[in-house]
Length: 408
RNA sequence: GGAGGGAUACCCAAGUUGGCCAAAGGGGGCAGACUGUAAAUCUGUUGGCAACGCCUUCGAAGGUUCGAAUCCUUCUCCCUCCA
Image: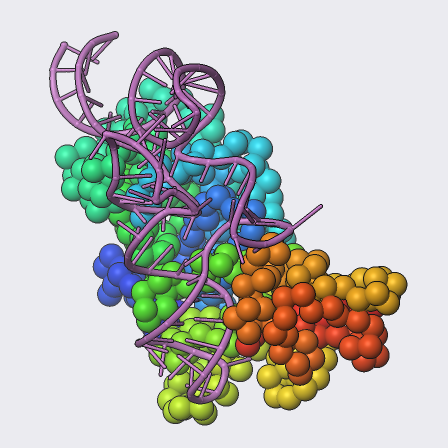
């Protein structure tokens, strides 16, 4: 079997590591326990979380033992990395709820029952720490002088940094120490923005325990343009189907930049690299084929094969020609209201395609709304029952947003 | 505790001799054209509504005024320096 380190490297996961040679050797000769921490700042995992998840699964498949560390404790502080402002403090209740939903979501991908993978929560050891003991054991190993030179803090020195956030590094570093002691955890992985936090833990374990542990950072899911992927402005792409429907999830991937397809196939699917490279090499319109594979594979992984097929069928029906597909967002409205006719603006707000009547008005005026095959040009256009076929009517907003109105 | 500076729309950021401010500019978003459901580019748009007008908005609450993002008072939060 290929060395797991090589697998991660070939697929483009690795950004930086401490002692790459040693780590590779270690992963090649024994089963290693490793961990990735997840801050519980949101109520659902996002597409961005797939990178660490996939990297963990690659190692898992190679026989190593992953620890999914939920940040029930560290989230009480909030990681200042990459943040220009103070993080909003979450209530204990909110954090617990987030941790719980992460737990459920991870359980869909990994079986924690047989001990081959571990789900932990750092609230278990951070919440009851004694400050003085903690400072004497952990605090003394951290040089403030050095911390102040770290990118994370340097940026914040301008805008303000409280001790609360400054201390984040210590708590995350302590996690590594705790996991080393409890599970003989030897490796911490995380997004590249976690480099300084990871180094913090790595140095702490080496100093306190004199043990050889390692750190590795993963590529962040960004577009070639540099913006964070899976966290669109419009809203985050969530793994929770209630927040981002499987269809929207599929579409997000279906529409990635040409330049990003190959990398995303490598990072987000288990397809063999030969296949990834073949698909990534497709040119011009052909590369759409690669995007279809990407969208299907990842949707299947996250939402299951059935949902992936539905999303794919819906997309093909919509973009391949006229057609109404099952798996399209829809709104049911009573048949009676269309006897008199419903004005287009009301219909747009009812279906959620427009947040307000003003927005709907703009959409219509700019030619962005299509009913069936007819573009709507009048803002006071009345939609009547006659326009429905088979009790259904498809409204299209722009080129890609479809919504189905069903009479009931 | 003392002195000073700041808080503007999704984000950044103008505006503070009171009216011409629903509030410049940039980013982002949305829509149109072009395309391959891509990128880049160009154009329009981006508080709400019964819409050539009306209503709500410039940290919060009051006040002055015919009229306030702009002036006054109190409060909240943030930053810098001092202790």
